[in-house]
Amino acid sequence: MKSKILNSNGKFLLFLVGMLMAVQGFAQSITVNGVVKDKTGEAVIGANVIVKGTTNGTITDFDGAFTLQTNKGEIIVISFIGYQSQELPVAEQMNVVLEDDAQLLEDVVVIGYGSVKKSDLSGSVVAIKAEEMNKGAVTSPQELIMGKIPGLSVSQGDGGPGSGSTIRIRGGASLNASNDPLIVIDGIPVSNDAAPGTPNALATINPNDIETFTVLKDASATAIYGSRASNGVIIIQTKKGTQDKIKVSYSSTYTAKDPYKRIETLDAATYREVVENQYKGTLLESEVMGILNAYPEQSTNWQDAIYQTGLATDQNISVAGKAGILPFRVSLGYNNERGTLLTSKYERYTASVNLSPKFISVPLKWDELNN
Image (cartoon, rainbow, N blue to C red; front, side, top):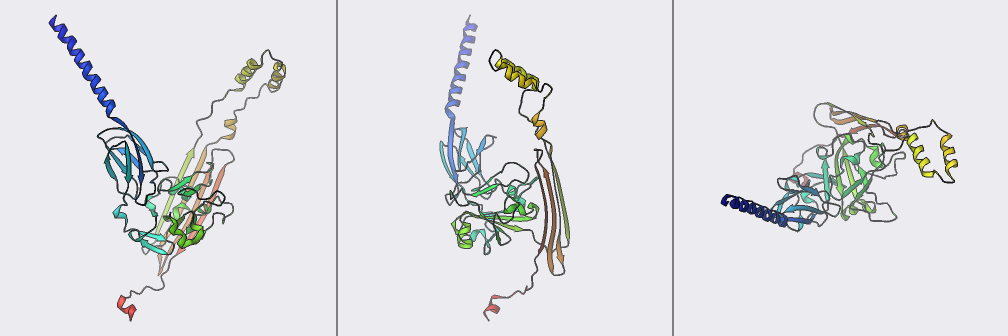
């Protein structure tokens, strides 16, 4: 009898301890609301926010805000390309300011009137090198920088092959005028409507020829390019010849797309049956059934009729090096993309010749210049 009482008391104690642990665990769970900004006060879009040592995380939205469900006492890690990562204890409200990565401040950034170090810049500038760009089957240059630059939004078009994208730097500033940023290719400003037959100015460039993207995001860009830069500036530097031996590069990609997930629809026989039951016993029954019975053998799956397997290929070959005293780079590109809609197709040929000679290369000392 005594053992039964002890056994019963033991079960009760275990139940009580379990309830207390559950209540304690529930009390420790909190909802974290926060905002991530840079030193200038601008929102950092797409920053990674993750609980340290777990897979529980999220990213910041267009306002730099995030919401995360976690527990008290845990550590949140906030990180983004070009900024120093921060590890902070959780709190219900978190305002995080990310610092620039000091190791990147020595990088040279190409701007409108030359090139300077990042540490010497006073404006908001982001530079992306070739190794930092998006990889994979890339058709247009804007796909290289999607999600890579804070404050830059790339909205895909209608999804068709070669369709243009809408690019916005820190939102739109005008209801009536254009909100497109100024595109500068190798120092030459290019208008978005300067190439008829293409969705935008970027569509005229082979993504394989691009070496760096530099984005000027604040009002200081207007001091360089005038009012055309009021919506920001995207500066593109293409690849140049080298001082090394002649080097031949070739790249090839093949892609297949299949719209396998179709909308479920009724076949012809089932459709006739549903319509017959819907109008049975009504004044319209004979008229509706007469229309359906006029084509008794017709049963077309219109999704099969308009969809196809999309195939794409991208071929690029380039020759770079030095001929005598003349660094050069020559490239050819071919892109062919067949969309998943039966009539959608995009084909592009590109050719580029880049010569970068140095006619005067005499090292002079400062005292020689003064004399």
